[in-house]
Amino acid sequence: MDHHLATNGTSVELRPTQYVERKAHRNCDAKRKAALIVLNCQIKEPLYLERLYNHASFCICADGGANRLHDLLTSQYEPSDWTKALRSLPPDLIHGDLDSLHDTVRQRYEQIGVEVSQDGDQYSTDFGKCIKKVIERLPDVRDILVLGSIGGRVDQGIGLLHELYREQVHRHPDVRFWLFSEASVSTVLSCGTTVIYTPLVSGLITRNIGILPLYGPAVLTTKGLEWDVVDWESEMGGQVSTSNHIVAERITVTTTKEVLFTVERARALDD
Image (cartoon, rainbow, N blue to C red; front, side, top):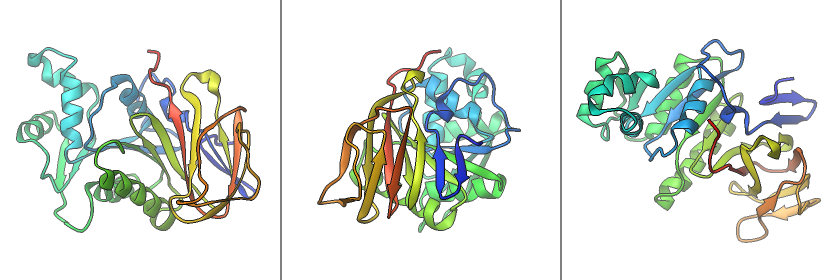
């Protein structure tokens, strides 16, 4: 059984902790292909980034995301060792409209052999542009890991959640999108039943979860939560399940409409 995303009858099985588990080296030949998109948001935890990076067969920085990666890596070395710093976790590609990419950062990455490409389409976001590149470069990708933020501008945060839904439900239904934000791991659950493995003993997640009907009214049934529900109508402006608690090693969510599932991640990882 594939623990990340497996079809079993009418249910799907997910494991949110999979991509933050310890992995010594990057494995580009993994059976189940994953890609990492680094968005233009502050990166505070090198170990968290490293674990996502090592689980990905392909890493792409969305425009200003390259600035963020550059700043994080070079902050861990002497200024004269910037080449060594950037080579420690090099992206495979920097892509977007490039209106945010600093000239010095671009020059440094190009100097160590990182490809930089531009897409001037003003009707798509850098995130959308990067997804197209991932599908083009890694056609057998099954998981796209998004290192991003919903803690800044409200419109940008909601826009990101909108794009997650659009890409997974309408454009790439065979790909699982995971959003790794400042405090949480989030993914869109499809209609039907999803089994989610939530081993609290791993120390990678906390017991706090939310199931949000951001994409329309849903009827929910859950098992494995402190406040389980059966045939429960949920919609924005009505009843929503926030700040619920995991009480089992796996939980089950059945829904009539796509919902956003979020679990709080541990604040610190053990090296």
